[in-house]
Structures are given as C-alpha cells and as structure tokens.
Image 1: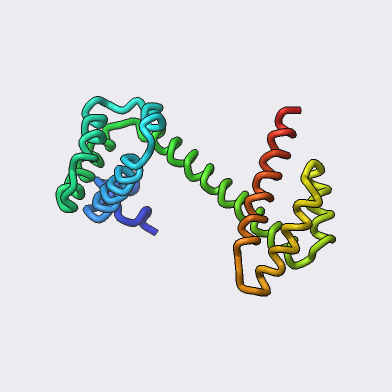
Image 2 (image 1 turned 30 degrees about the vertical axis):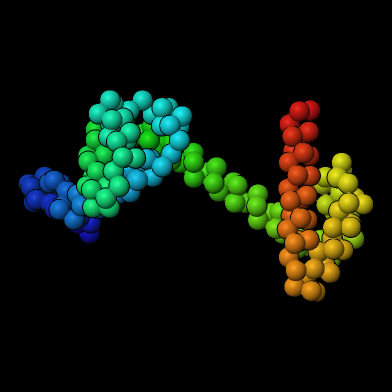
Amino acid sequence: DRGAPGVDYVEEVGGELPLAPSKSQVKRELHALQALAERLVSLPRTELERLRLSEATWAAIEETSRIKDLRARRRHFKRIAKLLAREDMKAVDALMHEREETARQAAAHHHQLERWRERLIDEGDQALTAFLTEHPGADSQRLRTLVRAARRGREQGKPDAARKLFRILREEVERTDSEARAE
C-alpha cells in the first residue's frame, strides 16, 4: 500500500515522503469548494455573519444575486470557492454540519408524525391510547373524530382528512414538547 490515493510519493532512504497532491485531487477539492460556495450563497445572511468572512468573500457573495447568466454564475462560484479556500474552514464546516443536523432532526420528527398518523388510521383506538399516554394533554375526542374521518377518506381516496390529522398531531406534539421544556 503506497498511501492515500491521489498523492504521488517519492522514494527516500528513510521511507516515503508525499509530494504535492495530484491534479485529480486538486480538482476534486475545487469542485467541493464550488459546491460549498453554492450552498453558502443560498443561506440567510444572519447565518453567514457568524462565519466572520473576509470583505472580499462578502463582496463576492453579495454580488451573486446580480449575476443572471448561467455561465457567468458558474465562473462566479469558482471565484467564491477560491476566496473560501483562504477562509477559516472550521467555522464553515461547523455551520454546514449544524444545518445538516437540524435538517436531519426535522426529517426524523416529520417521519415520526407520519408513523403516528398511519398507526392511528390503521389501529384506531389502541394507537390513540398509546398517543395519549405520550401526549396526555391532547384532545382525545378531536383526534378520534379526525382518525375516523381519515379512515373514511382513505377508503374514498380523499387525503384531506389525513392531512388535517397530520397537522393536528404536529400541533399536539409541539405543544407537549414546549410544555415539557417549560417545566
């Protein structure tokens, strides 16, 4: 094994020493920085301000909205990528990781609500009892009515009641979570 792919090595008396990264590696890193530049430009300004970017990088980011031509935008993202290469990438990586984690948590929360909705529609009162155990302040009568309507809607091919059930479940879970945090 000669080490990491994309790195050329030279033989030396005491072992192997790496030379500069290969052209392919440099190109991959540049493409990654360009993709990062595209994501950063789409972020809200308040989040970008936490990064303490240089004035040149800020100017380039602010200029992006004025560039409409697709080819010019691609060149512009290359420019931003080169500027980003000079920035503190730890802060940028931390921000992107934080955003990804928030998105993952939101997706997990959404899937949990979808599972509750499906379980309530499929199992009925048994699942409702389990939901009310986890969320004791929920309006059981309202939920029971919505579950019945969602069942009828499923049989008729109308998803409106199931959507409404989902919204009410989301409200109940958020209310229960906020009450738990307040305690």
